[in-house]
Image 1: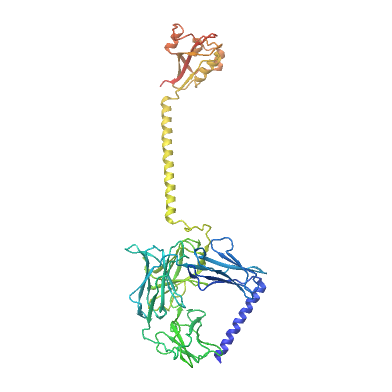
Image 2: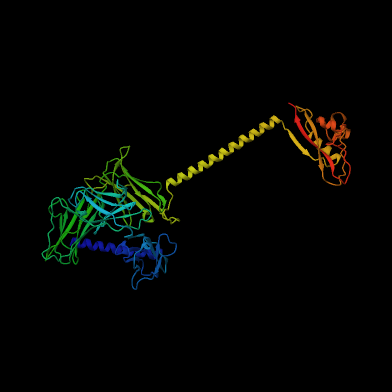
Length: 607
């Protein structure tokens, strides 16, 4: 009677929760968040059919399916008649369909939010790896075994999966052996009866995490109980195998309440709960009225209740076989470890991150758990660092939007695998979608270093050329200082007398007190000017050239004295001793080509 009252009270509580959710919907006007899943499962062999389901609201008018990497909806479907869900059917699973999906729907209240992510994996893309076990596939509970998954294709990662209800999986980066094969070693320490079953492994490349190889050959592991608790078989073998589970979950905090359920047949008369390590049934319960199950309630979870459980039931036909195993874990048995992430808790899809779980208590194993629908978990053996702390590094390479959420880690000792520490502080990981959907989403550290190195080399080359230019500039400046402003001009004396005087005065313009004095030399060279109609005359007398003694008052005002003017010897003699190659500076008009004398003026400074 008490059990029935408790059950009715629980049903009333569940009803009140549903009523409260309905009221919240009416008040807020926000459609409920949809749910997404795949049938028969999310890991699908190539060319096999698969159905993606999206469940929303009874008022939904249209469902849309989104695929990561596509800006437009991947598909649209109307809800099934008289149902609150829609299905997206893939008749043949191929590479284009592998990926990460979300769904949402439209109702009179508007568009709903997106569902959680669904990772749809395609298998059979590459040749299968090989799977082996050491020491043996038939062991006793408590022993240690190692499963090796290897391939010659150079996979970046291997996944080991245990088939069955628990569907346990392990993921490891590959390592290369002496024969150039990639491999991974999965250590199960210790094995328990929960590991009874069939194992397979897959390989995939890191840039295509949803495209796996064919599965390896199946490996059947047989773990016998150390005390050999053989199940009680039925008389005719027709009874349904019971199912066992824990509510609210199988990982329970210290002193919290947990309920273990065992579901069998409507004809069951008694249910028994068996705990590994105990020869007698741990508890007995009658089935709930008008139900095909029984519950075993633990009001306060302590270390005595942590362990591995099975259940069975008795009916008029006899005893059923044992259920699968349930591992009930106690947390908060030890102080919490610390959890950190590198390089940042906010990253872009495709990047690599490392989560470190560490403690000073010397745990043998650390477990990283992602909370939420997927409830992903990773398990690693600890290593001791230089500070004598024990730690484990969980590498997520690459991260995707499926990793958005809250992470916690735990530690435990290997001789008590069902007694965990307190959970670490939560670490919230935010993974944003990458705009670049190429296979390599981020450039690696080596590429960044190469770019930095190229930039440094270019900068050094520029500095080198600038230094050469500076040396040349200084060399030219020193040459100019030695010549002290030496300026040579060659002008054609083909103008009027005033223009020629202005040219000479401009060349002689220096401060009168500057040292050393500038001296102008005039060198006259004859040349033929083949131009008719030269009308200008050039009376170049000593009065004009020797400005030091015979400069007129008008010219003194216009052109102050700046130095002495001397004619070169050949020029001085040209006036009095005409030759065939020289003519007086007086030119006359003629139609015939005339000999014209040019003057080259050089200002030189006497040191």
